[in-house]
Image (tube, rainbow, N blue to C red; front, side, top):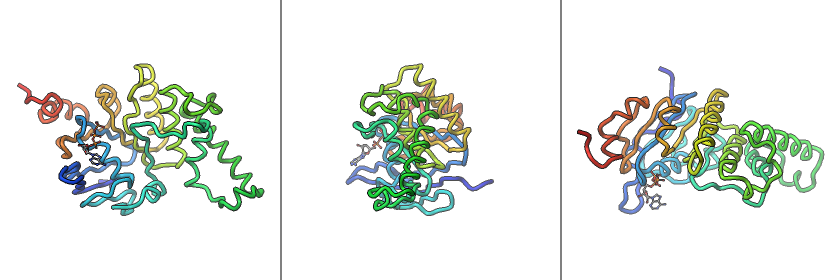
Length: 256
Ligand SMILES: Nc1ncnc2c1ncn2[C@@H]1O[C@H](COP(=O)(O)OP(=O)(O)OP(=O)(O)O)[C@@H](O)[C@H]1O
């Protein structure tokens, strides 16, 4: 079997007396769309925060693309090829859509601050290339015509697309999306599903948290279920949907 792209084992994260992640293990293969579901407070976002360096896990191991990322800083995680979006949209509200994506690219560019301030030919050429790439990414997610709009004036669905474009600007190998369909209407959700399928077809692996179970069942190759910080099930959507532990976790009662 090939080595997984991302592998975590024995991850624990405690907040005081609360055991938010309890011995969580999972591995994600390159090219997968891997879903993470579970009731409110199950630990999904905490796991994202651990995987992106925002939270330091107490125990465990974490490798990505052959590199040890256990307890690494967020910028190291991004440089290693993991990008994310947030459950609560975190855009620069008073910057344009284009500028938001340009900011996302700085992790992969080389011009120094000195060069940017004095705007030598190298800095100017690099800035033009960054703007062109940002425009490409806006086109890619379907909001190219809105490039000059301030982020705060975009519709909710377009803001979510812009967050994805900004994350893609770091040229990730794995894109982690925290509830990207939250607040979307059915049409926007369908468009988002198509966008995620396109991103995967273009070679980016996707890790996805989402409460929209129908979307998850139709989109994910595999799904893991968290409940009270523990992984209680993992498998293809059909298996997970019919797993008695999952039904109990969601409904609060054991199935008949
Ligand atoms: N920084 C923190 N300090 C203290 N407790 C936290 C912190 N972050 C998360 N928690 C707690 O950890 C538990 C897991 O929360 P988390 O946000 O990971 O759940 P979730 O599965 O993403 O939930 P939701 O679906 O509601 O977003 C919750 O009880 C939450 O209150």
